[in-house]
Length: 171
Ligand SMILES: CC(C)(COP(=O)(O)OP(=O)(O)OC[C@H]1O[C@@H](n2cnc3c(N)ncnc32)[C@H](O)[C@@H]1OP(=O)(O)O)[C@@H](O)C(=O)NCCC(=O)NCCS
Image 1 (tube, rainbow, N blue to C red):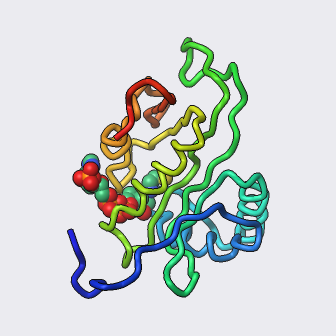
Image 2: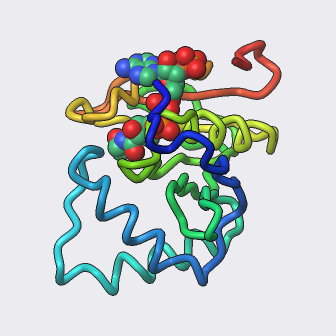
């Protein structure tokens, strides 16, 4: 759906996240946290920001920025070692990237920013893994399926998803 109030506004630019982005990323994460859902307590602020700095320091995570360079979306990832299983009694998996958190600020939703970030992540050519809580409010499980991920199982309160390069699962 096109938000007419945003018509003519320049499309956000997707780029690798940097440690200097940590505070802005934190602000977006706080905005979307209750929909993921994830609980970020006030007392945890410094700890979470440090964790974000470490994650983006690996240069694999993405952010989208508006025309002013403000961060409007995030896709936080971390490397995943080969051999880890996705579900109990499951097959060991190849090395790849774990998608930790994805989010778009409310005023920028419905503009395909998240699918564009996933596409950019796929172009890195690494297997992608994601866990989606059953109480996620962003329809993330359905979205990932639409984006070519396969559901490989369920563990505790989360569905596990995987996308492998070269398996004909591009959008
Ligand atoms: C989920 C979220 C990241 C989506 O970001 P977005 O940039 O607004 O994504 P868009 O809605 O523009 O994506 C559009 C695409 O999603 C599809 N889509 C929309 N709702 C859908 C649904 N319920 N099920 C499946 N696909 C859906 C659209 O059909 C469209 O795909 P198409 O172009 O192939 O038709 C955003 O809503 C958000 O930040 N939510 C809160 C945080 C969250 O839940 N994060 C996920 C867990 S970490």
